[in-house]
Image 1 (cartoon, rainbow, N blue to C red):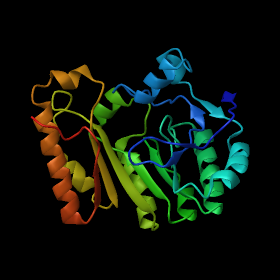
Image 2 (image 1 turned 90 degrees about the vertical axis):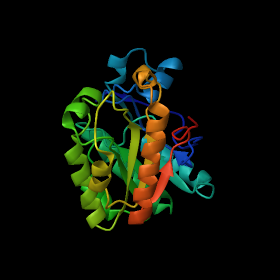
Image 3 (image 1 turned 120 degrees about the vertical axis):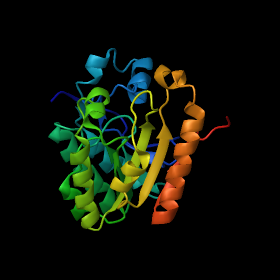
Length: 254
């Protein structure tokens, strides 16, 4: 696959539940239609021009060399490193990126640095051999494959994501779910309690609304809808002893 190089890899993130992060690829083959915030930002700053270009990812060839330079300098400041906020570390159908991710996590773990992972791809079983301090997550907003094919056409099928996450759970790893961007009923009618039951084995659930979508704003009851959904998630997590985080802006007045 096409490669690029960068001058830095690890940086402090402003995301509410993040510490440091790394993004060792540019672009993402999943082609999400939500729309994709990462694509919007990369286009805004001129790193990609079109969505077609975004969907042809490029791997950062000097990722491991950069980590060798940056870890000694930063390791005392870092609580954890997240993979990734502007690309996908286990991009479906792109094994080179997943292999680089495992190598990077191993290098960070060897320095005593915990990693958190989030993917719409299929998590590698090799992660089970790494530090048990790591946390592995998948994005899951539905169980309906028709919706997945419409909104995340290049991403892993929902069942495959769940199966890979369960394997890591059974291996004693910490697992989590990002239920964001959760769709309003005009996008898809679905049963939130059923979705929560499907992920009841995880250690943490992060729930968030769909942003940057005119379809959501057209749904007259979207504020009440997300308030009710958040209350359902909070109650479910409390009942099952699961850590819960509701993303900023999901719960609102009205």
